[in-house]
Length: 512
Image: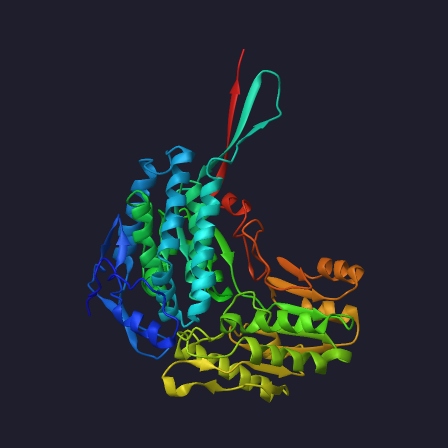
């Protein structure tokens, strides 16, 4: 199979659709680019192979995507290395890098509807979220780091009176950015922004389930003025493209977001090759700890949105509720009510839908198998628990609440990555903390209480990269995001994210 996509999308109608039918018509008018982007141009895979991308919305092909392999990895890395070594981006004045990145952000904003539609077709998230969240947040991220370009300072160390010691941060070189399928645009931006502002060249490897928006980003970056070779986009399967990229001896860093299982492989690949840097943001099993004095309406809203938004396909989704037994029943009823009223499952191209499709049939099957495991281990299915919208041909799971889950049950320990909430009661605060910390993960958590003394005690005791108090999933580009334990290491977002894409150099000068 050979790629048949063109290098540019067809012009889109000016008026934004307001109905499912309108968005379906818009989707039918798209000519989707599916080739790799290497050294400033779109190219087919060296083998000529491509794979059909089946949309989770209906199970039918929407594009053909280049099936990158080792030859394509070598070409992309060589392109990135040339661009880094000759300084075409690294050596530009910071204010010039800033102008290009701000232009890149503006082009993303101008391309809102096409990027949103590509994201929804590719991964099954609802079009309203792609329009309101994924595309704007990606643009904001690129702009945020662009603004940092001329605001970062090196240091002068306090040494002797006859010496000057400069401590400089320098770009690492070639960065392999390997991103997952749940938030392709946002997480790509989280990596591209700080890597580019530091002066690196990047090979962006999207998940095979979500290549389309990354491929489109490459054209926008080139239009913004990013020099050829500084950003290469390499679609393909993990074993054929991701593995040789992570093992490549001319890659200086792998920045990976995805499962803990694959994150461990990335660490092994680094050790087996050139000891390249590795930054990992991996799985999560984030708990909500709800004390008996909590505002249950606020908690129910935060919990429902925290697990059912993006159909639960979120690394830090609040997939566990650890609730005081005295308010357990009332809270569960309120969570279900919020979901029914505010986050309805529907067709992803319907602007009224609040939840969409699972990424593919295999993942839907895994989610449903874990729900069945919860049943077998004694959990009560309060709502949901099965497949939904099967008549569409797509891959949908009904929003599910499992009540009475035991702390050692699989649904309390394993990352489900779907719209499945596990509810476990507790009696004492110490018990709640032990449960919250009682998994291999430590990405995020929340505490719900009106007692600020308790809030501070629990937020200090819970081992997680982010702990929200009386809210969930509030975020800013100014705050770092990442995890403890097997949720990974290294941080995305905030100025701190730039640090991992640089290395420290000391330049010591003695003078007479």
